[in-house]
Structures are given as structure tokens and as C-alpha cells.
Picture 1 (cartoon, rainbow, N blue to C red):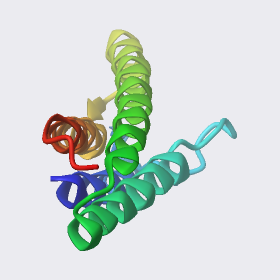
Picture 2: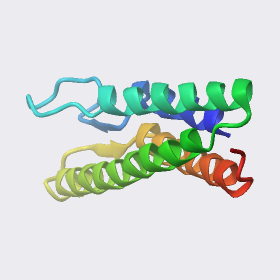
Picture 3: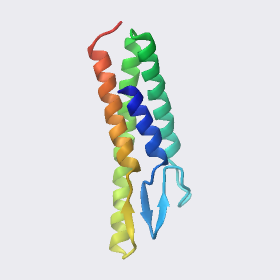
Picture 4: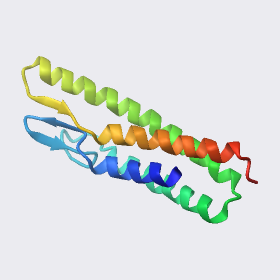
Length: 129
């Protein structure tokens, strides 16, 4: 589950997060010159993916499970914050009569972080030391 969650975090960074006036934006798009969260989610994805690979190879690393819970929780909170921001921006665009829509990228990141967290919790619950 950690591996799948990591892959989804990485993939969601590259998918469309939202579109305004027919222009699609991903986590790596430079729109208003603000911060781009795609690289952050991709980094979290790589870290969670690495944790998953280590878990599959070592099978006895409780500390990795605990770290994976922390990383996936941070990714989950960041995804929720970005979903709120994108939702507000799309609503504002709609109110101004501008064509805006949400994309699947942040939802994939949200699902990936939830799957990663579930895998990490399952790892800790088995108490493999």
C-alpha cells in the first residue's frame, strides 16, 4: 500500500489540478508566480515509495512505518489545503463568469496519501520490530 500511495502522490503531481479559460495547470505549472506544490508532493511520493520498498525488502522495520505515517499525514494535510485553495479559485472564477474547473490531480494526491497512511498504519499495527 505504501508503494501504491507513493506512485499516486507522484502521478497526481503531474495531472491537471485545475483549468481556467481552457488553460490546464498542474502542480508544476507556473501560473501567478506563486509557489508550486507539485514538487513537494512528488518528493513526498518518492519518500513514501522508498519506505514501501524498504518495508517489502526488510519486513522488520517499525521505524519506517512510523515515519511513513508522519510523511503521509503531512501530504494529506497539504493536499486538503490545496484542494481548498483550488476550490476557492474555481468558485471565484465561476462567480466572475470565467470558465474554471477542478482537475483530478489533487484528488489523486489525496487518495494516494490516504492509501499510504493506511499502509503505514497497517505496518505499525503488525508491530514488526
